[in-house]
Image (cartoon, rainbow, N blue to C red; front, top):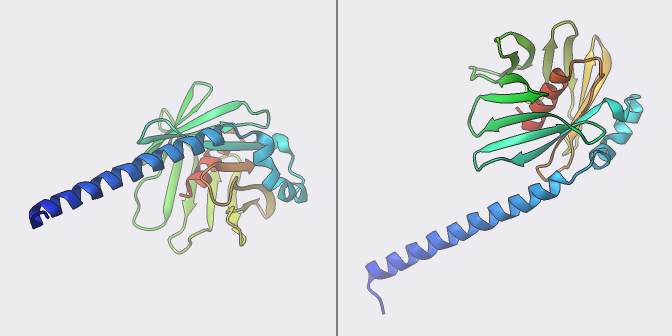
Length: 215
């Protein structure tokens, strides 16, 4: 029979050991899950969106899909691939950071989402600080948002429908111009977007990254 202090200390050690074991197995599960995600091909990402894309005459060639991967315990990377399964961009983010790093063929960009009093806002910027595109979500909306793209216009999001895939339709001057949705309804895998190839690649990646992060 142990004293109250000894029993309490023993119980505390058991709780700490159990908590450590839980964290270890969760990290191991996440690692295996992300390894599985990394094997995902374009056909796998395209299939859940194929019917929606066909309804709007959007072709697979216009698609990009992003797969989340862990770089370190605190740094994640969204690897963006095209319909040929080629990596065309990387978006690197740190937990809690408000600046993400976007790289396309060696070209550097920054995705900034500063803290504001109401709503959400994000900027895609070049290294010289010039703004390439802007994301905005109003204070009174949980889903309605828009992307403001110089020389293109304002893309207005409509959706999502009653779906765990968070599907959005994007309209430019009243005409549907693109769609996006999650790849898997439950697991953290990534997102896929279909947008005209006439839109700059960095802009399409920006739209994909914002949707994938649920900003």
